[in-house]
Length: 309
Image 1 (cartoon, rainbow, N blue to C red):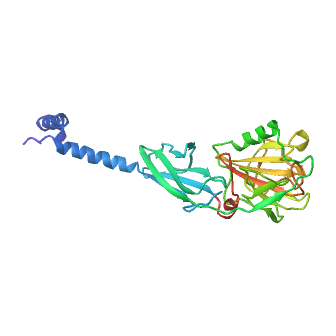
Image 2 (cartoon, rainbow, N blue to C red):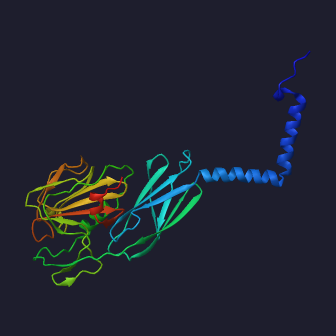
Image 3 (cartoon, helix red, strand yellow):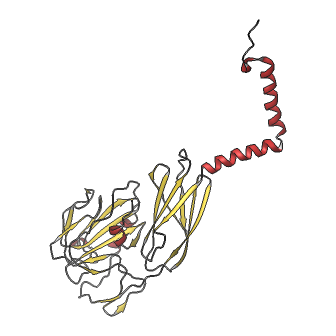
């Protein structure tokens, strides 16, 4: 008795299977369409984009961390994040997990912020309530010669430094305190200079009243991308060091008496980069520490207490 051919080798069955397949594709019955649609839906669902905003209840001056993650481990499309009329670059921080940082400042208006995230064929529109915050007012009297007039050259160099967006992330964990002196000026203070209120101004950092010559350390790892001296025209910032921590995060250290690093150096968290002084537009020895996210000054406090990984 002859042994029957396997199903996939039987000429009659194989011919009829081909015919059935061709007929299904050609006719495209409602059933076949619904099955195709079901398969497409499953595929599309696998690309689902999950978005989270941290903190969930931000205040003026806070940094927003927008974390986007795909459900499908094979999706590698970099999402795009928009808020208002600005688009923010996102960075890979884990498998199919991306993050961007968005700054808020005391000059923003409290209210609803709309964050739009696009990626993998998906669109996520999320709202977050930006809460108001009270900032104190302070009067500063600058002596002659330290009136705060900044030259174009000084402004351009410092502004270009703040705009840096380096793909690598250099920092790890919460930032350290850059000087051990007491805090005498908090972030966000509004000021009168020599009796005149400074419109559209807020204190863009934290002041530490450390002793003259006391060490200033890097609160996080980064590359030295700005070194400026009062003798070379930095009349407002004085002797200054600027660090690039990566992914749009930079920090500046003003009014230094001396600088112990050079431009291009890579520094570790805790490494001494200079010493407290009174150069530039300063009424006395202190360190001004400014932290910037995508070009705007943010409150450094959450970066020290909570951190952004």
